[in-house]
Image (cartoon, rainbow, N blue to C red; front, side, top):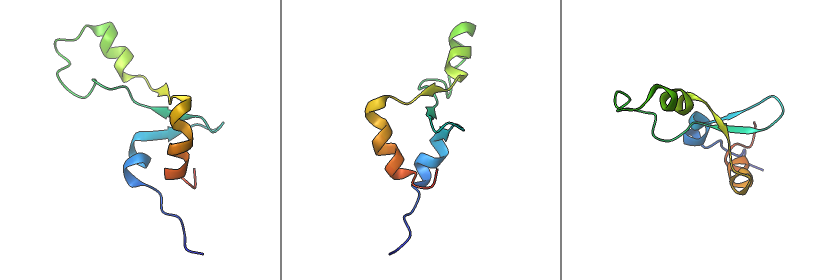
Length: 65
């Protein structure tokens, strides 16, 4: 049986916690930060949990995490 490959784009964007939860970054925080309010910029820096509907699909892309 061949090895299952990890999807490299997903590996760069999704972090797996010690308890197995999936975390992702927020959209909109990559650039043009000067016009955003400081509170919003701080919120965009935080990681949030992946929606339950997407977890199964992402786990298939990250087989060894």
